[in-house]
Amino acid sequence: MINWNDLGFEYTDTDYIVRCSYHNGEWGKLVATRRKEINLHVAATVLQYGQEAFEGLKAVRGIDGKVRIFRMLENCRRLARSCEALYMAPVPEQLFEEAILLTLKKNIRYLPPYGSGASLYFRPMVICTTPRLGVGPGWDYEFIVYASPIGTYFKGGFHSTPFILSRRVDRAAPYGTGQYKVGGNYAAAFRATEPAHERGCGSMFLDSRYHRFIDECGAANFFGIKPLKVAEGKRDNEKNVSGYEFVTPRSLSILPSITNDSLMTIATDAGMKVSRRRVPLSELREFTECAACGTASVVSPISKVIDEDRHVTYNFSETPGPVCSMLYNTLLGIMRGELPDKYNWCLIR
Image (cartoon, rainbow, N blue to C red; front, side, top):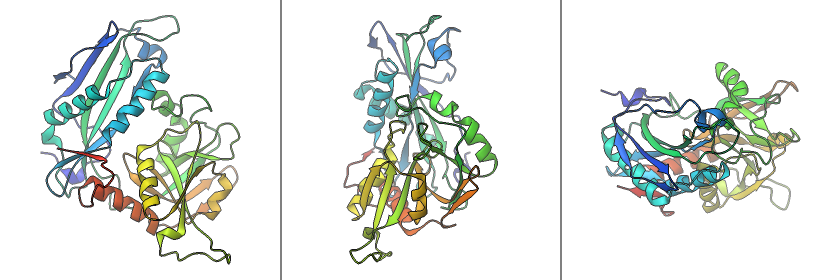
């Protein structure tokens, strides 16, 4: 018996995985199996040269008892871009959707109930299985989807977290693989993320070319909120979110976050100015709120950014601000069926 209220963002075993093989230039049929192990040749290209890509998305039980899968086809399209960048065959949209729905069906008893704050997380991935010694892409792949129930990201309620700025570790290089969801990006960041996590903090990365612009927050996108100024030079009414600007970095090293894209849409509809551009580190002083955003947390407000090398701390609120709270509650409300899905983001079952 699973205690839905005690789940974290950790793997919990479920009944089935779904998989499909690519051989001789075409995808085969989906198979649901209880076997979780993968039989790989020791020289498989995924092990030698890291030729693999993956995704992450959620299914949530709504207030009406129906299941909602959030922006599934956007995850499929992003996986396709990652596969193509690593010279792998992309997974067709129909095959991707069938795999997610079959994984849901086979593991439906692990879908947490409405009100628990938990969800069923899907991890689709494509790995290259071709044995190769020479450096180069392979031509045989496995498309695999597994599921795991995950709990609410914030134990004890929606709250803010301190972040440590990394100047000595770069997450990804310009024109590299930073804009794709591939495993090497994450392993390369462990030297910064793990020491930060041990101190109860998140990690923030600067651009790897100049080390002057904000790039990402660990495995999540970054955004900042700043008050707009009226013509007289006075701030607009800070109780009205339309008096704020939503600022998020534009960079070739950043993974295009589906969550961030959704938040920008919500911010625009709320009357906020939305800017996607380079964000100088010095601009942190102008933000009243900052946050990381991604599938796991949705919105993770930042209480402060600690630049230890420069002995500077950028302080924000110890509790989530009004704009971050509005964005967080609106997106969760859509996912849970508590608010109208006027964007048609959710596949309902």
